[in-house]
Image 1: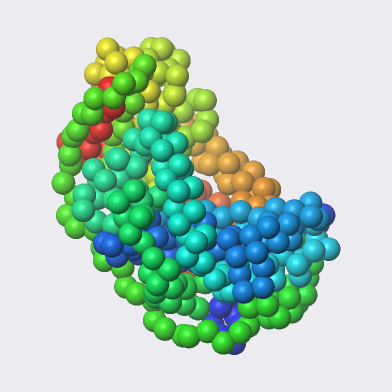
Image 2 (image 1 turned 60 degrees about the horizontal axis):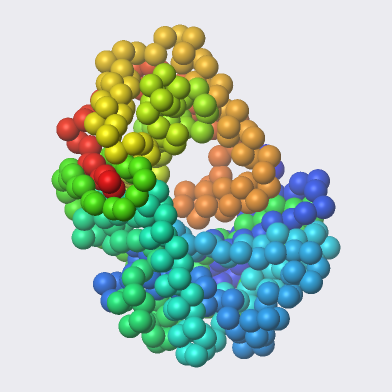
Length: 406
C-alpha cells in the first residue's frame, strides 16, 4: 500500500493514498475528544463538532451545507473520547473545494452565541434520543462504571446542566488548548497523485498556527470492579459486563483483537452468538467489543434478553469465557481464526472511507502506518499460548463489572 506522507511548515501532518475511484474521501482528524474536557466542559468537544457547521467568517450554515451537497458530495463529523473528525466524500474533480471547506469550518468558525444556544437544544434532543434507546445508553453508563470519576467515564454528549453552562469563550479555550499541530492529521484517499494532494493541502492548511505542546492526559485510576442494577420500564433486560483492557500500543493488542473476534465479533459463528442465541435461544442480540485507547482500554459484552433469563444468559457467557481461559485453540481453530481476522481487515481496507480514517488515525496515534502485509505477519505469528494467556488476563470473571437495565 503506497502512501504519500508529509508535513506542512506549521507542523500539521498529512497522508494520502491514490486509488482508482471517481469518489474521494478526505478528513481532518484531531487528537482531542471528550476525555480532554475539564470538569466544567462536559459535552464541549461534541458541541464544537456541531458548531463548526454553523457559520464561518465567510459562510453561513446554509452555504457550508450547500458547498459540497450542490455537487453531490457530503460532509460529516464525529466525536469520540479521544478524537474529533470532520470528513467529506466527493467526486474527485472537487478535491480543492472539499479541502478548502474542511479548512474553513475547522479554523474559521465564528461560534456565534445565538447559534450556540440553538445548537445546545439540538444536542439535548440527541441526548434524549439516546435515553429512549436503552441498548445505546447502557454503553455510556457502563463506561462510567468502568472508569468511575475519570473523564473517560463521562458520556460524550454531556448533560443538560453542563451544556447550558457552556460558553463561546470555553469553546475557543478548548480549541486553543487541543487543536495544536501535533494533534492534527489530514487524511485522504482518492484518484489524484500525492504531489497534487500536497499542493491542495498546502494551499488551504499551511497557515500560521500556534505551535504549543499537547496537554498531557491524566491516566485513569485503579480499576475496581462494580456491579449495578437499574430499574427501567423496558420490555427486555439489557446487560453489559466487561473490564479494563489494553491500550493502543500494548504488545498483546492484536491478540486481544483476535480473541474478541472469536468470542463475539461480527461473524454469526462467533462463540457467543452460537452459544447464547443459536443453541440456547436466550438473546436476539449478543456481541463483544474491544476498544483500545491511548493509555487504557475496555472490553465489553452486551446482550439483550428476557428479564427472567439474565442469570442464565450470564452463566452461558461465563462458560464461554472460561473455555478460552482453560483450553487452548487447536491448530485448525487457530488457523481459521487468523484467516477470519485477515479477511475482515482486508475487506475493511476496500471501503475507502474506512481506509481514509484508518490511515489517518494510524499516523496520528503511532506516527506511522503499517502496510497490510505487516499486519498479516503480526496475526500469523499469534500462538494459542498467547491467546490463553490474554484470556486469563482479561476474562477473569471476578474482574468483570456488570450493569443491568431491567
